[in-house]
Image (cartoon, rainbow, N blue to C red; front, top):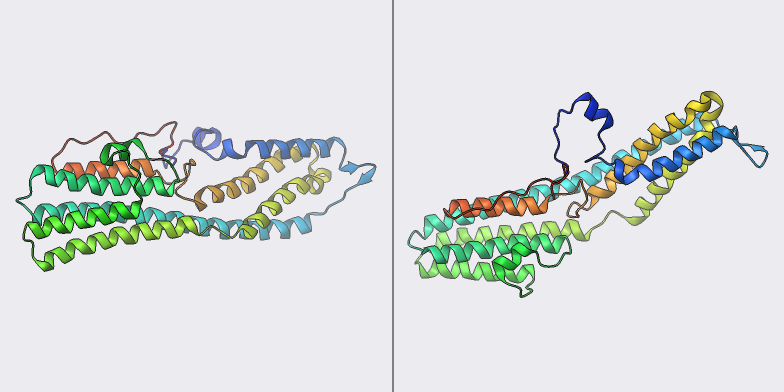
Amino acid sequence: MIVRSQKPTLFTLLFAIRGTIVPVIWKKVLFTVLVSSFVVATHGQLLDYKIALTATPFTLWGLTLAIFLAFRNTTAYQRFWEARTLWGDLLIVCRNIIRQMLTFMPALGREQRLALAQQLLAFAYSLKDQLREAPMSAELKTLAGDEPVCTEKRLLNFSRALLGTAKEQQVSDILRSQLDEQCSRLSAVQGGCERIKSTPVPYSYILMLHRTVHIYCFLLPFCLVDSLGWFTPFAVCILAYTFFGLDALGDQITDPFDVEANDLPLNALCRSIEISVLDMLDEPTPQPVNAINDVLL
């Protein structure tokens, strides 16, 4: 996730490169500008044939393309926001479990509380690794060892340990049901994240949009060359940056669990959960994850 000021200066607004979509699309934009320069140099002719395109079809085409891009990016952002909401719920549930554990089982020893907390944190880190399709992270190995265990198994083991400990501490059935409800919410968070991960945007829709954006930007110089002349590459550069940027941004946030610059910072979110849990237990807390080059992973 890009973490920069929401109120940038005019200089930053116009010339910032780091933490933007420019590093992803600059090659496409540059190629489009080169094509535009070639079109201007040849006066829009290919093999002695003048390609004359009017502005009318490009106006209609551009409007339709903008609507498609807006719809696609809105859909992608809905996936992104739902994923962020689920991870916010995960933080809330982890706090609730620790709070209820301390309240319902005040006689529980420090080692037992810490062991349960580590299992809970192991579930969060395991979910992060699962969603990113990554090997076991160093944090997960520290919490749960090197043995690979699936996320569902970690949740099951934690639920058994938590409810079993509650029963040993003679917690009433009503209070144990509240603990079980929080474990069910953990399962719901996992299921929601897996639904987003395993349900991509239809490939045919993405392919059609990519093709349309590229064709539009490559043909646009033939429409502008007669009216703008050598100003054509500059105008095409701005339009290409807009369309290619929106297209690439939609690609990035469609899978919010990836490690692109605009995806969710799962490492930082897991660390926030760990800090919150350990702080409630009066245990030493690690340092928050810091952004690297204005990007938080």
